[in-house]
Image 1 (cartoon, rainbow, N blue to C red):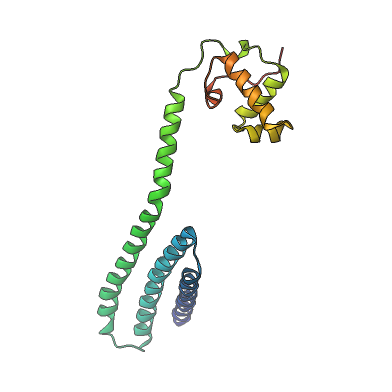
Image 2: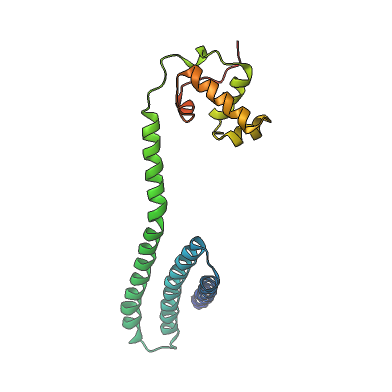
Length: 195
């Protein structure tokens, strides 16, 4: 039983040292960065490391009481004040995590609204397989369906100039009866070879 007690104490001590090193590293990163993203991650890392360091310190104190290195009346202090400190540290970490997630969650909500709007758009009466596209327009259409929307992206993928890509897109839109190239993404169209 004594061996287990010593092993646990060593393990908690190693954890405390590691959390302390992570906390120091996070503070150094905070001092040297100008990136908002890196700053946010470093603050989160510092808060979490500090909370774990408090937990390790509390556990080491309890181990020291068990070993007789600290008086028994310290147990209630460590359990009471230590739990409060751990709770505050955990709460701080949770609040900060929610604060950091606020921006990405807003972006996701915004993207979902865009998808809802796009999926509710009216598609042309003429089915896509009756648009009578040329072979090159079919290639442009396949590139658009794979996510290449801009003239530069299409030009790079198809080895044509951006002006030529724009012309092909304009012709496809005219044949389809559409006005915006983004509409080409929502048309239910199988990418089958030209008949």
